[in-house]
Image (cartoon, rainbow, N blue to C red):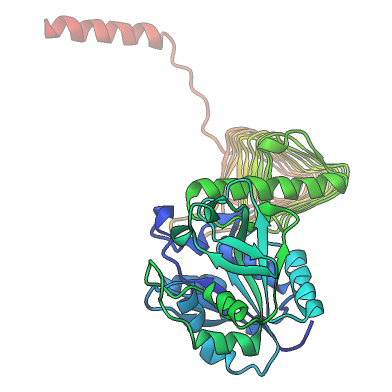
Length: 469
């Protein structure tokens, strides 16, 4: 591609039909804002340098810019006067480029791929034309601008609101993506006028000017028309989500991952999964999660920004920003919170929660326990109902449990505290002092049995009732 290639992404629209206070381009598909999908496609070879991407913002533009960061260049469309007017706002920045090519895209078309944009540019350059319009042939063209063609090719693009009845029957539509000769684009922008039923500056008038001037204009027809989907309401948002989810799952299945129920499995764009791993129904994998080989994930498990090594079994659990070593068993109903690191062969069982803790090799937290802000050695057994009392109302304190320790059921470990290697803690203890290696700690009140307590209780209750009468 030529070095002097620039892109303009139109992201100023109100998105009225979304029925939302959020800018339309920040609504998410597959865990990413719509516009981020467009930017990713652009940077997959078409326009790799973010500084060569100009984003036209409008409604809640500050939020859009804050979400995307300062890598890109921004201009503001203060009044919503159409796509041509939006592109016109980028003209001062486009003036910095001498010749070359300009890609123009809409920020609400998340299904466009980098491969499609590269092919669009390749055809544009090989045909040596002044503009190339990315088009699609769709089953229902309602709402889209129609591509009107004649003997010499494209004659015009007519918007739905301005189309004649015969023109509305045309199924080839304008996707809103264009490739322009930059010099011609800058000249055409200066000619735009709001001469239409809506009083707007149409970007499509640039194509009309070129055709009227007998300049060469081409169309590039999408192989998969669904890539052209623009998002204008929540129904289309869900349709785009479904399309992209199935595309992601297909990629993983072709790489050796078993997905038992693709309609009820959700995997993010940046997730990596090793071969021979099985995803059960209800699995949600998000962010930069990495799953190793030969794992069984689910059913009904959500994993976010976590790394899972090979041969792990995770069922009906929630993991966020956690690291899990090989051959671990997690769940059902486990909760691994940020900062959790499990060594190999660790078991975290049902209704157990771990937060900001390192759990050593072969250790077990079988059920109904909470371990927070702790370092647990290898081959430690933590009994049911155990909790680390890590918060004193002002600060989080650390619990350290040595290798081979045994923690009895219903133990309270009041941090900061250290349990030595091989130490034992009797069930029901509340431990407030360090325990030496190999020692047995029992911290509970002595049991007292009060004889005939139940009978005496009944007699007291009867006497109180008689007194009341």
